[in-house]
Image 1 (cartoon, helix red, strand yellow):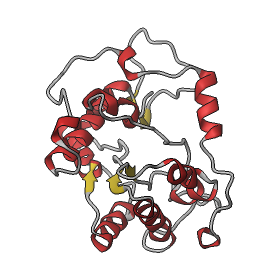
Image 2 (tube, rainbow, N blue to C red; image 1 turned 180 degrees about the vertical axis):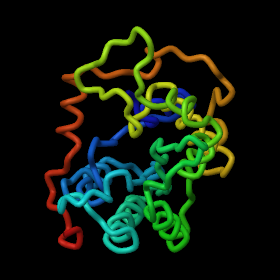
Image 3 (cartoon, rainbow, N blue to C red; image 1 turned 90 degrees about the vertical axis):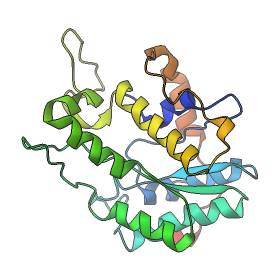
Image 4 (cartoon, rainbow, N blue to C red; image 1 turned 120 degrees about the vertical axis):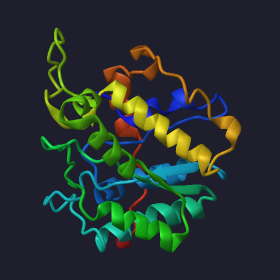
Length: 240
């Protein structure tokens, strides 16, 4: 199981440092209210880029997670854009990939509903660049079909043991192969839209990677980064 931001350094030069602040089971609301956005803004330097996108968890009915696409979701997402600009950074809206829900005819269900549309609206209102991984993923899953699209997600393959924290037949989380292709698309979009300088991007046509290149963290380091990337400053009351 791997995230696309984990694979993004494969396509960027040493001029770029990727700080992956993604958090499992976080919505735009919970990520912000728990001080994770504030930590990012405090750590940003002028000229840094903030790639942000939510929606995978915001639909959940849990009061601490749920947002309405064209209501509280937009309010929280606007705080990411505004905060990055106030830190003299460059906010970039990144639409998340769609889940793998493919019927036998190859049609992909739009599980994320209105959240991608809300993000596009925010980008239009705030004049922000958009990396449309959502639209690209729909095209991918439909092109690959019901069986081949499994190869991008955490489906066990013959001879692989089931890990304790990994669920087989998981249509939400990517394998390394899927993460790499999503990262490739993100890097290509940043390049073709001239969001970042061309000399920052590399190896877009490279096809062979080893698992070790993804830079897996040991459990202790992962736990430390997860717990430490939270601001001790109070979250603004407008977040509630």
